[in-house]
Image (cartoon, rainbow, N blue to C red; front, side):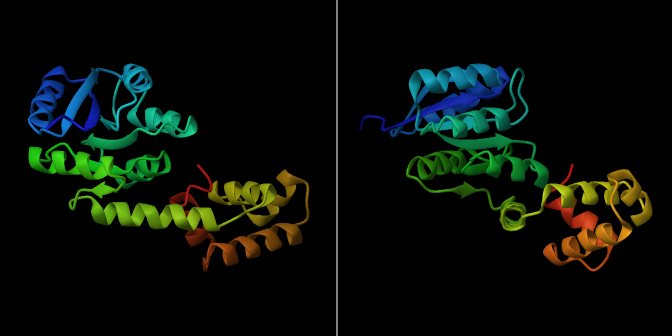
Length: 212
């Protein structure tokens, strides 16, 4: 059987890359088109070989895996990104999904699951390891919430100043508006984010990445 799935492996640890190459190359359907030791090289290899799947770490020199995925997404490159990483915090999962990743696996994943993930991702499916699935689900929910909430530039200014702990009076002075106007913006924000008080409002805004 001739290999039908081409893969580029990107990780800054040579021994790990070699191990991954050995594992996935054992499958008759998979062919490793290249190995990258940093993000920029990964991007170049994807452009050169147009693989079906890029298996990529998040933490890499020159460009992070997130930046690589985002660049491929912006250029509408067909290669699908599968992250194999130790970075499984929700913030990284959110960034990965927003950047267009369709798979996410922890580095302790065994070879059989990695091969399965590559095949499913190459077939147009998504693959998230059971160990991170709950985090992925929560991340997707936050992304959906973020996409549904629309705030105006002025509301964002008020929100940022509330997050800094400023009072209504100080915000009004800083923005050269009345306290009544600030209170109206705050009331609109509470409604849009389904928050009951300023503390909850700020917490939700940070979770939904409406403010930094």
